[in-house]
Image 1 (tube, helix red, strand yellow):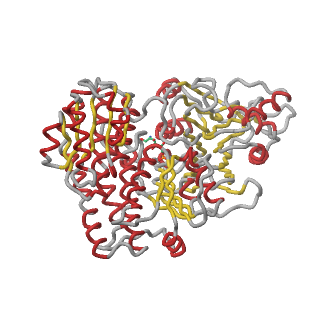
Image 2 (cartoon, rainbow, N blue to C red):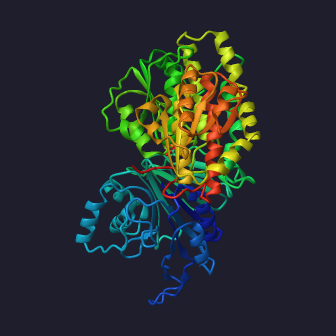
Length: 630
Ligand code: AGP
């Protein structure tokens, strides 16, 4: 949930920390801070020894509530010359967003400075114990407790103190710390939350994800759980928390340029990412639909393929938008024209506490853009304990869920910075569509000719999404007419019922308007009471649908009650046009691919309404891009 960065090397640390935090701000942005150790002033010791003494400098700590800009303006008035430092941008979990609760936090004697991403679940118990030993706390945070705990074990060896503290701490964490008396070393360790080391020349970096490092290096090392890293300007040492044996770690090269993680000329990351969708679909098709009737998943080994071939049921477990992708996956995997496998989508936070009837003959797919969502990660671990085959459909390479699942299928959507998920969602839908066809072939339900028809239409989708992007006038008109409305209904059936939920989520999370998605058949069971001449209703009604006529009836019912109908319909559908105040055309496509096309006008409509309402589109209030706490 929070963003962490550390630097040690030949350059001034503060500017590097600030720039890195700006790249990590989407992970949480209610407060931020940095701590550094200014260059020590060497002084002759009082006992007359030549140059033996040195005055260990005190930490310089800067913290501000709010976004990085506030911290930056505070520091611009001057900062010390330091070549080692740590920084943090926060999304509050324990303690309200405030300056005093901002990280870094120091130990009681000011020996240790610590930044943290995660939750110390037993912080209450530890805090009482430390208080009994004389600790006094300034903040309400669990992180300050961790800083005190580490310092209580500190006798000149920061790595050892962190090892001992980690054994006492329950919960998920990524810690990065520096010690006042060890200005040449940064120590960090992790359990579940991400940390990646950036390798420079005569300098090293550590951060929550690669976007903070890309200005300086593309060579990185992903830390695994319970690994501790000691960074000096000229060396990296990785060990396990429980041992001192040096580990040999693989260096990965990140193919994302810094520019990719920038806005690229668009006003918001979200808009840039909406426009990236045709390219994202093309990349997936290039990787997966390798021939006119062949679909490949390079990370599905023969062993996993065999388990999938015989699996009794597929569970999909995810949150938010990724959950809506799971709901579409339900229809795809059960579709008699595709895999025809029993499937069930679950919200991660429900699945993990519901004692699900899932077993060794089942498969569980964990859909997640960030690969760090706490509830989804916990559900994955629970499924693994039950011997279930676990597959991650993940966007962030090297993320925790990607590394812990039995297999991972990357969605290759590139960095998604906007908090509202768009291109990652379409990538999830594309991946699930191809996976269901792949399983259909594997289980002998899909003939090569049927697959060929499916793949041929799949390869048309990037162009069809581009067409939607090129014709936005109706969406602009609708947004201008309706952006002051405070309540919206979204209705869909079958494959497009999940997109009724997704369209509503997009609107509410970036415009703060009330929006509710329903299965259109549910209208008569309550929601129709909302319909009057002031009520906008978004109706998803693509022509190729087994329930098209039923959707038409629902539109008639709304029309009869003067509802404001905004339809998403297949080009030239005059029946729908006659009943609609606004109509967003989409190209014709197979029913199975229709959610990929209907999602795009929903994203654009939400974006335009948010901009007209002057909302913080990329970082909506109360939200963060990756929910790494429960
Ligand atoms: C989507 O627009 C939201 N930002 C949110 O619902 C998101 O989809 C959810 O938190 C899941 O995140 P994940 O895909 O990284 O697991």
